Image (cartoon, rainbow, N blue to C red; front, side, top):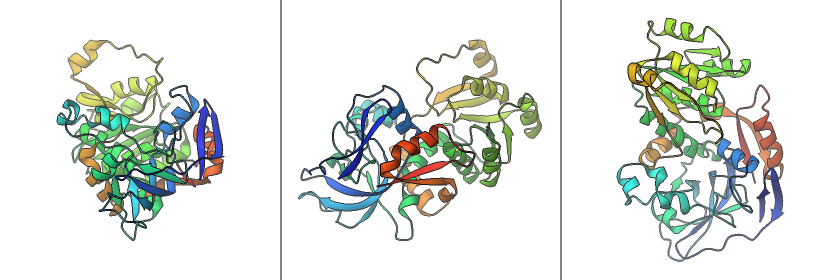
Amino acid sequence: MKAQVFRGVKNLSYEEIPVPSLEPDEVLVQVRVVGLCQSDIKKILYPLYEPPRVFGHETAGVIAAVGSDVKKWQVGQRVAVMHHIPCMRCDYCLNENYSMCDTYKNIVTTAGFAPSGGGFAEYVKVPGHIVQNGGLIPIPDDITFEEASFVEPTNCCLKAVKKANIQPGQTVLITGAGPIGLMFVMLVKYFGAKAITTDLIPSRIEKAKQVGAEAAFDARDANLPEKIRALTNGMGVDVTLLAVPSDKAFFQALDCTRKGGKILFFAEFPDEVEIPINPNILYRREIDLMGSYSSSFKVQSLAADIVFNRRIDVKALISDRFPLQDLSQAVEQAVKPTPETYKILIYP
């Protein structure tokens, strides 16, 4: 089969590799579409993992083969693939910290080499643990593979919305109006809260309004805190979701978030970034800082429901489609986006 193999930093090789062989409890999925995620891009551009690997994890496709012990799934079924599932038994899982679970981190879908998602290939193998514990999600007949590929990123964003306990009537600031920021706008609106967004690109500011933001501003606006207070009865927002890895965005969030509010880190910062802060700001204003990483098994069914019943319009996020052989060009466009670049999908 063809695959994009990570051979080193900024080095993707479009090459022929063996189709993964199956153990009795495993399933092979033919990839029909896979989303390009910011986490994939970081893994390709920075020395985070030893090569060789095949990345890609926002996968939707068709079951191509099943192991001899697999009874629930049949060849030809259309499925969205969750690339890892927690054990549900360890101390992390019992405290609902599913993304910290060792099983979650180490048992991963693969196209070969060290398991790393495997979606940037023609076929991906789903380990037995994932097959048996909800990692394959049937796609309804009226839902496209493109839409189904959004189940995993919707889960990740939904986890953050739930962790921040966003409630109807609240106002939420979302820093960044890329594909993740725009999805946050849709989810915040779906749950009855008001979204305000910031970005540096004028077309993204307008796009945020189109998908449901109450207001959207240039992130460089020196009067942003005053404008946000004017929209929130002088209070500031209840929650800020940091969807860009920017220390400037964090300090802006401090200025725009009300006393007793919350700031949630969703974007991953470079390791060398350190943010100095006077702890009395948190103490006196009772600001909660929190992080949300990856997906949550707890919201998996809800994420699928939201996508499959079109409660948010994920199709509005798609801007570009690339064949698998052009993955390097897709990554380059994501890193240096045009004004109209949002979600990029890859087709094997």
